[in-house]
Length: 286
Ligand code: KIV
Image (tube, rainbow, N blue to C red):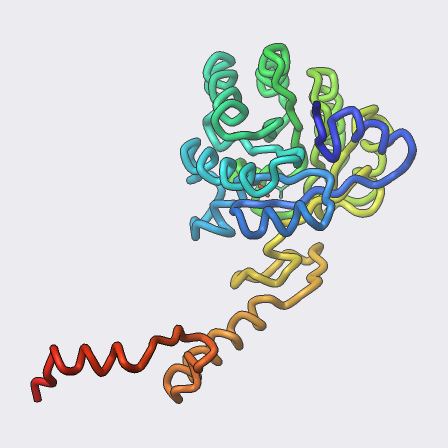
């Protein structure tokens, strides 16, 4: 019996009935279990893993092995969740066969339910269709696609002129045509994202693209205030866990140095007679 909290058809029903979809990034066991317990619809093992959790400069350094390692941890933490894993840079751009094999690894050994690819040009749409034809669900991603941020002129809003706006609409439609079950719209003007969301039958999930999308995704570390780097303007920070954690760490140091930790209640007791017996056997040397 499948007792998953939410399935891919449920996402479509949510769109049809106007209920918003939620997705959050997860890379490790502790945060993935928290996120799953909060009741999010989808967990995304994003390749933002590279910048957020591994200290890389960009997502292009993230490897298949790293995605598999983190995807498995997320699956162990959230056995019932609908998990999407990002296909890392050059794991799907080279050939259809290699893409299918890599997508298959993320599902078979990484524990993901679906994969996400970036871009929607003819080549990527064709590769996406080939992955889907093998029975692997694919989420698309258009607009600001971080794996090609250098070519897009950096991390900035996309589709502001009519030529690029039209190209992005065409890419989103091509991904839907290829069989994607959902498409992420990253850093688009709100009206463009809303336009695409109305044209697509499958749900759109926005990040930095306004409120007209069918769902929203954020990088969990950004919304929890866990990241040392600055957060993009579109992020709403719901907590300042980095500050809370820093205070807790300083308190630990002070407690150890001032001998307040460990206290009696954090230590195990033993019959004093045993220690006296040991003292008879092991004499103090100095
Ligand atoms: O890698 C990631 O976290 C993503 C989201 C920002 C959509 O692709």
